[in-house]
Length: 175
Image (cartoon, rainbow, N blue to C red; front, side, top):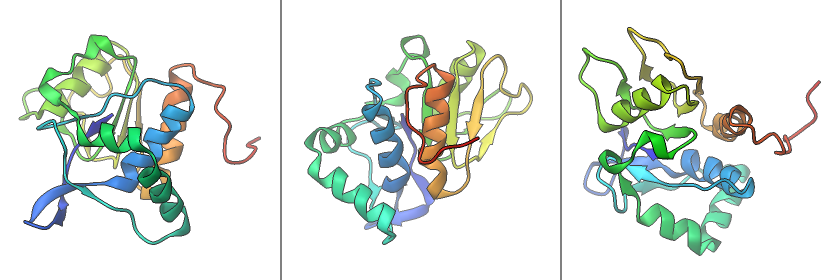
């Protein structure tokens, strides 16, 4: 999981933060599916996180997060993005805006990693959908995007389906 602080969400010192509800939901979807989860952020370490809102779904998610020592430890000790190698992963879930993926636009470490994953045919999910794919589109990969904070769990399930983890139970039966 790629965790990118969002400029429109700031905490204490005015520094950008990550929307915890967007990251924690997919994190638990992956863990519940017995998928190995590696958390990475631009600077590594413990990125600033903003707790979820007051909806009942967010409250349940945050209660689970607060009780889960493994989750707290993993979110507090992320790998620096420039030390992540696309070849080591089957897919990626990006929380936050990675910016441009392909040259000639300026690219972030997240954009570079996403480009490598897509170029090798690996699926990537991005939440929210502010990824710039010009001029190569998704290349040989599959790109799953979402805009609403409530859709992050659905996007995570779609990514699991793309990597062949189809034993995940949906929220409801879908025809």
